[in-house]
Length: 392
Image (cartoon, rainbow, N blue to C red; front, top):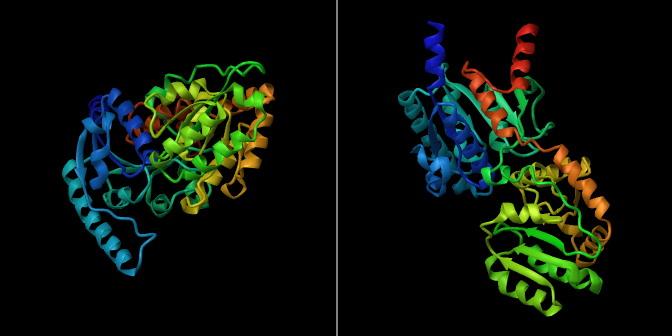
């Protein structure tokens, strides 16, 4: 009988609740792929923006409910958002009773809230959330007391109530499979007379300052330093031509685009990365072990990017430069010093790799599987469970 029950659990349905930015979607997609490989059936519950998903999330059954963000709106907007979330809660409750999943896993952001609240009210459904940032997000802060498990990307997560800490498990933040393929590529510090590969990652979300300040900082470097540079810069589409012209006038070897399809390769080639401090970026830098100058997005909710950057900087794997301090002069000083100190870059690369969690996808999957009574594969997860049972 026990064998039949285990078999049912190993082939049962697990629902994922996510939506919004890549920071939420990447971990969900990684978990879906891992659980699928272990024989579980999957369903995705999201809002109307779920049409943008790809990979494993694009293959599994998808269900759309109503959801909306409450913050950043006027009174009328907030009222509409609350109504939308209430409607989503009702929709999710009916959907979950029909799907009968073993567990529901949420990845933060407002699209996950109705589903996770509804799941927490249905006794037989187990619940877990994953927090990608060093600060518990507002959605996950609301959900945490009602969840059975809380998986965290960082060993220390701010905003977690003391009463919820016994439910928290540090798994790390899963990264894309193409990044994982590069995880074993060693860091090769640049020779002082060799090309210096600088990767600048801003993307389309609020990185105009990179296009404005970084070329001006490059202009302040010594001539010999500029000649060594090989720049790959991701810029906002309206800035691509201007930034390209700036580098061309300086005679700097630079490739500027709004999107790079080979970003994992560019990351592993880089001697130094200048980037924002989003959760996925931090996970990729630490998984591949690459030194970086991190510029937290100043308008991030709860300033979570500063907290993310602080975790890796405290481990000596990066240098933080707040937007308010990111002048051309300050950046040129930092960049010029690092170009002349390959040993410092190598030390930071090693420090970044030490705090990486390349096993994050497997560990997160083990948390979910353990939650529904299945067999886990990670020794650390088994040991934690045995310790908890011994204490109980």
